[in-house]
Amino acid sequence: MTANTSTETTSAPGARERLLDAAEALIYAGGIHATGVDAIVRQSGTARKSFYTHFESKDALVAAALERRDERWMNWFIAGTQQCGTSARKRLLGMFDVLREWFASENFHGCAFLNAAGEIASAEDPIRIVARQHKERLLAFVRTQFDAFILETQGDARRAAALSRQWLVLLDGAIAVALVSGEPDAALDAQAVARTLLDAQITGSSGQRNASAGNKSSRRSSSKPPPTRRTTT
Image 1 (cartoon, rainbow, N blue to C red):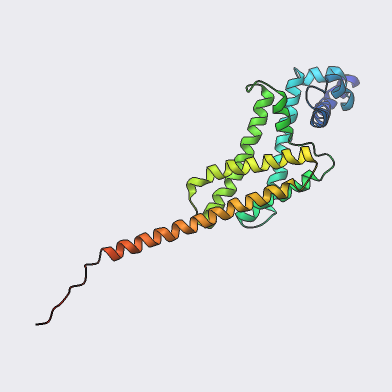
Image 2: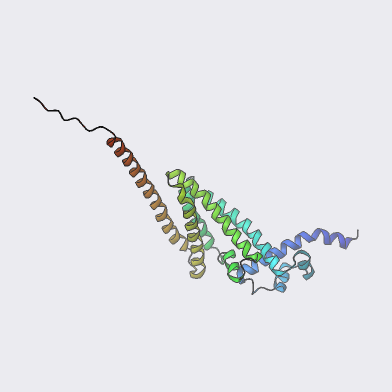
């Protein structure tokens, strides 16, 4: 084995990671169509040959970069959410505090997955598939928190799925508004709406329990025989 062959073998994994790093940074900041392969190769510090060694196309590189970002972003978001409190309510509302911290950072350019999906027309394109899978993972995590919230509040378990989807709309809506407006407090505006949504569930659950208790009491009362009227002679 020659020295050059040995060097190429040991440096290959590093080249792939550098290409992924460069692709993610450039595409997140400037978009998929505006970022060429030459720019990615140049920023990665690798040879163009390395690009074709590891990826069959630019789209394959973008999809791989998004998959890696999905894993990292979800780990960050889940960890941040879990640090917001011991109750599901605190964790759910805390999601918006986690987002606000992200919105205030210098490298915030919106949701990389929504951005990417907006540039790709076909729903079956690998890039769109990765974006969709990311949102499905985020929705699944939100659902775990709503399942816990329903248990805590003795709410209607049938509402968990709908509430989770509504919550995802609030999360993505806050991201979109923060990107366009440049205002990190878009997260707090969404949080205020989210708090109202949670309070409504608690109020509704309490009303249902009270109504159920009243119905049971009414049924018990109606099952008693009517009092006998006695007459004196």
